[in-house]
Structure formats: structure tokens, C-alpha cells
Length: 125
Image (cartoon, rainbow, N blue to C red):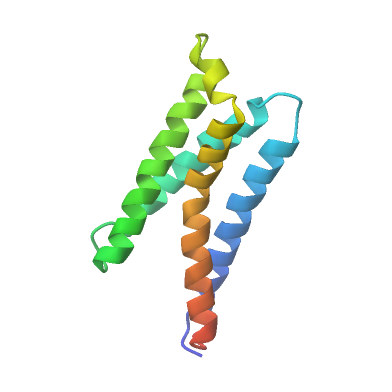
């Protein structure tokens, strides 16, 4: 045991919250309002969390978190356009855009899942 138990718990909790917020947002309500409210909150959280890792470790980790940040910005813009009273609302409500937003917000989930897997595989929990 290496003492990474707190980090492992934090990563698992963060991944579960991210996934549950997107699923609840998609399944609640007849419109996409709940989904885009969850997107607003989660995109801000992802952008904030990505700054912790940008430029501090290897190029691969930095690149992954730069992609996370860009995905968070794209998702945030789509959420703002959903609530804006213009023609863009119909565009961001299409299934394709909703899928892209889900993928953009799932990037940190994939990164955290890899970290949890490696931590468990190496016995550092």
C-alpha cells in the first residue's frame, strides 16, 4: 500500500459524478434543458480540473488535458447556445451535437478510468 488511497477514492468519485450528471441530464425532462444545465456545470468543472495537469507531467498527459479543456469549452459554448434565443438552438438540439457534447465531457472519465485501472493494476491502492 502506497498511500494513494485518497487519490483513488477521489478519482472514482469524480468519474461517478461526471457520468451520473450526464445520464441524469439526458434522462430527465422532455427537453434538453436539464442536460444542458448539467453540461454547463460539468464543463466548468472539467476546465478547472484540467489546469491542474497541464504542463506538469509528460507531454501525453498534458495533451490529454488540453483536449479535455478544449472539449469543455466546446461543450460550454453549446450549452450557452441552447439557452440563447436564436437559430442556433435548433442546431445544438440535434442528436449529433448532443453526442459530440457527451463525448467531449467523457474525455476526463476515460482518463480517470485509465488512472484507476493503472493504480489498481500496480497495487498502489
